[in-house]
Length: 132
Ligand code: CO
Image 1 (spheres, rainbow, N blue to C red):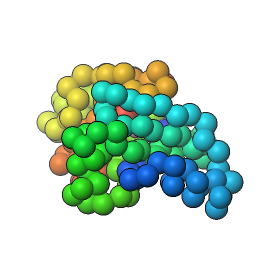
Image 2 (cartoon, rainbow, N blue to C red):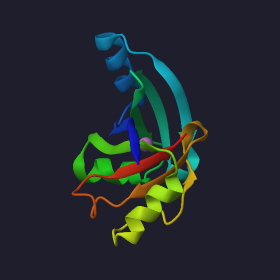
Image 3 (tube, protein in one colour):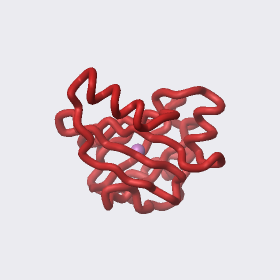
Image 4 (cartoon, protein in one colour):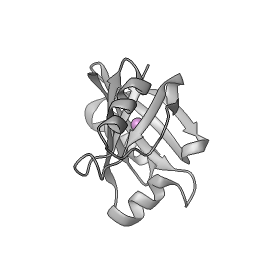
């Protein structure tokens, strides 16, 4: 079901600082930038081969990313797998008795459809399923 790593999400305190780091050190360019109000984040995508690094900064104090940084500091936040059908992959998680964060697929950035699987079920890693 998992066809590719779509992106790796990294929680950062200062988006511009993080973008500047990738640009300066690796010559990496931002290919997409979006404020996702429902998630309380501003995100930037940097393309790496067929995948992305997703830099995530909180836009409000009560967002999941703000809480993550307050608790654990900046760093790896989630891994996103590309799937053909988000609904089908999510159903498989639920059918096997594991915990999900999103009970049904919802809109993500770039016009994608996404759903998150609980890190409690996935060995401490927050998993995002991404359907293009
Ligand atoms: Co993501």
